[in-house]
Image (tube, rainbow, N blue to C red; front, side, top):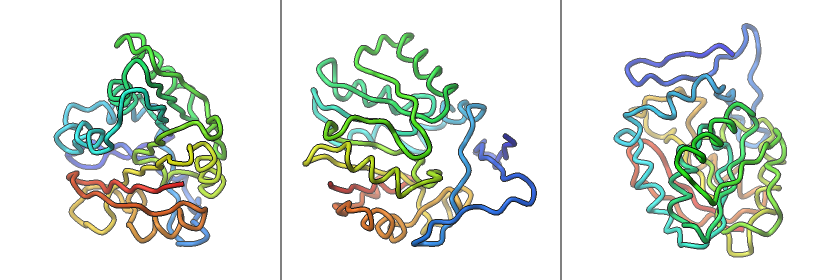
Length: 221
């Protein structure tokens, strides 16, 4: 997959093949972004990520408790998987899913190197995260929902995987803010997220804007 490096931020984003038309969401008409390949993992692990995105603050805002069962969907290199693992503790569990085996290998290596005992990796498909039904307190999607090629099917299965009191949380770069240095197809507005998720039976709970570049959007089952 060809990748584009965006300016000083070193952002690696997939480029469409020449002449290809992007798919669009049937409700909002937004272009569905291409998936970042495993070659972009070094951007996920860049030293500036904490200052630019503040992932540790994001996880604190989720108010996770020891013993919770959570999922990191589209987990990539496992950056957030590790933070979630530490937040829910040894009595909790983290299911890390991705559609790319190469990404899962990176997570498995992180789990081994960091001695994380509560993480399980799962190979997902484009339409199914392969999470057990009614089992999760929280499902986290970090800059990944906008890349779902089959968003409606994925949302139905994600909703089914939540416990009755479970939360589905999206972190998405703010489309409303032109100063966020991310390509437009990799941003989402609150309005578009609500339109797409509420149509699949998810109830909007709140949006948190404590992070420098991203919304934290919380939905309930």
